[in-house]
Amino acid sequence: MSEKNRKIVWEELSPDDRMKYEIAEELGLLEKVKTDGWKALTAKETGRIGGMMTRRKRELGQ
Image (cartoon, rainbow, N blue to C red; front, side, top):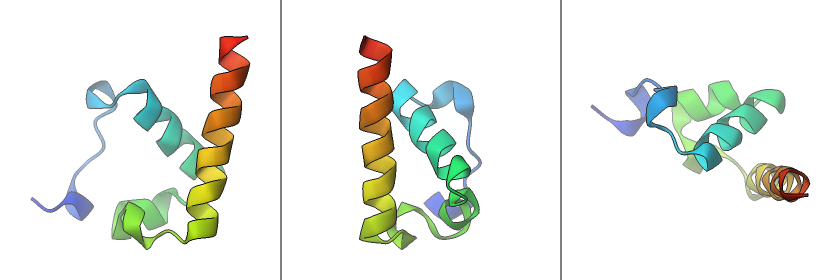
């Protein structure tokens, strides 16, 4: 089964991957990721997700 057609199984995801999917959903990018994969995101979209992940990790660490 191709990566695009796979179902997301929350139990199998690492905490970082869960956070990445949650942020993508908040930004309205989850459907794009589900249909076309992570490679379909622009550099701006990817950077936004990475920046938000870094901020959340920093907040959780404090």
